[in-house]
Image (cartoon, one colour):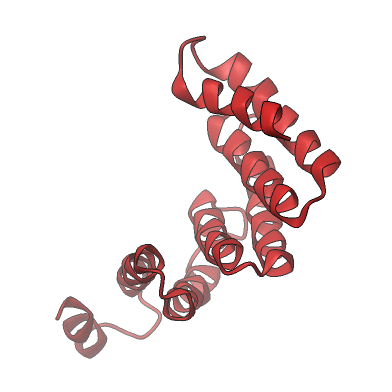
Length: 153
């Protein structure tokens, strides 16, 4: 309903449509309908690439979202392509010890882990862990997950 109204009243490249497309893509991803999720995330990205700076973290988030879907689908080369696009933006836009940068390293590490390239996965998990050690309190659950990821590689 919301999408229909927005499509009738807004230009096709309006940022509000990007947010709606993103939310629909998220829902399809959670439901396991990955091809529909990719379809809506691509629409989101098309709008955001026109509307935002190429180094905007919001664009990186969209690249990350579609990377997650490709990872879920087992299309690891596509997942890496989009995770790396997101990561390049995060490196430019965020401080070196920002938790979102760590999560980006972690996503890339997960793909390498899924591909069976455990040395490459470990490299990215260790980068994640170093940032979390500096940025998070010692009892933070993300730090515990980071230890777990390194231990399972």
